[in-house]
Length: 375
Image 1 (cartoon, helix red, strand yellow):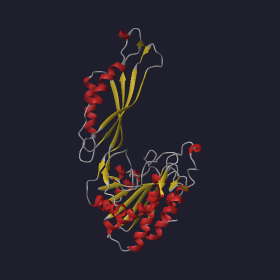
Image 2 (image 1 turned 60 degrees about the horizontal axis):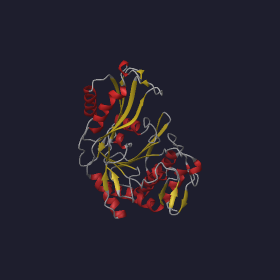
Image 3 (image 1 turned 90 degrees about the vertical axis):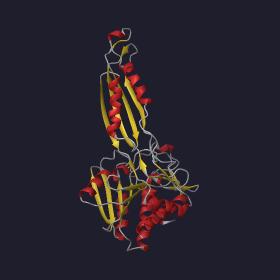
Image 4 (image 1 turned 60 degrees about the vertical axis):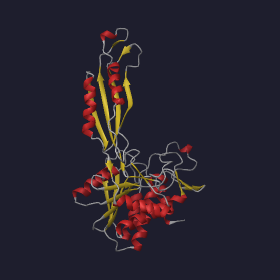
C-alpha cells in the first residue's frame, strides 16, 4: 500500500463530522513536525485549526484544506460503514475520500518527499487546515487568516485541495469563485377577506411585477473568467394557510452569485432602485457569505498546470464555476489562490469514493508544483 493511500485511510477512520476535527490535524502535525514545520494549533470555539510552516523566507507556498466532513446521511444506504475505508472495484470508499482527506494525505506526503529531496529549498512551505469548512465557516480559515495578517505573515501562493476535477484528475482547476449575497425581502400588505380585496392590499400581487423585473434583469456580462452574475429566488412565504384570506406580508428570499464584474454596492443599489420604482412598502436585509476572488494566469497557475501536464498529460481548464470555498478568505491575504483536487462526482453523497488510480498522481502533482515554484 502506498504511503498516501495509507494516510488517506487513516484520516477517513477519524470520523471528523463538522466542526469536529477528531484528531486529524494532530496526526498531520505529528508527520510534519519532523520535517521542520512549526505546527501551531489555533482553537476558535468548537473549531480546530492548524497552521504549519517550514521556513520564514519568501516566497511562501501554502497548501490549504479542511479535515471536517459532512454528515453521513442514512447509514443503511451505505454499502460499507462510512468511516471504515474500504477498497473495492478499484475505488476507495469512505466519507471524506473525495472531499477532502485524500488531498490532505497527498499534501503531507508530497511535503515529505519534497523536503527529503530538497532540504534547502527556497522560500517557505505552509499548510493551513481547518475543521470549519463544511459548517458555518466563522471559526475556521477566516480566523487563521486574520491572525496571520495581524502578525504580518505574508503568503504568496496557495493551493486549496478542494475536489475540482470533473471527468479525470487534472481536467479542471478553479482560479476563482463567485461571491454569494442573499437578500430577504419583506413586502408589506394589508390582510383582508379574500371576497373583499378592495378592503386589503395583497403583498403577493404587489411583489410579483418587481420580482419579474428582477428575474429579467441582466446584471453584467461576466468577463474572461466568469459567466454573468445570476439572481435567483430560493423561497417565498406568504399567507395564513387559509384559502379565504389575503396575506398581510410576503417574504422573499433571493441570492446573487456574482463575479468580479459587479460589486456588492452596485448590485444592492440596482435591486433597491427596481423595488422603489414599484412603489410598495418593503424591508430588505442583506447577508454576504462570500466575496468573489480571481487569480489571473500567472506563476501559480502555470506551475500547477505544468505539474498536471507532466503527471497526467492533460492540459487543464481554468474555471470559476461552482459554489464558494475557503479560498475566498485566503484571497484576502494571498494574491494567488487556486483550488485543485480529485474528481468530485461523489462528494457529499452516500458511498463517497475516489479512484485508487488518482491518489498517487495527486500527490505527485502537489510535489511537482513545489518543485516548479521553490527550486
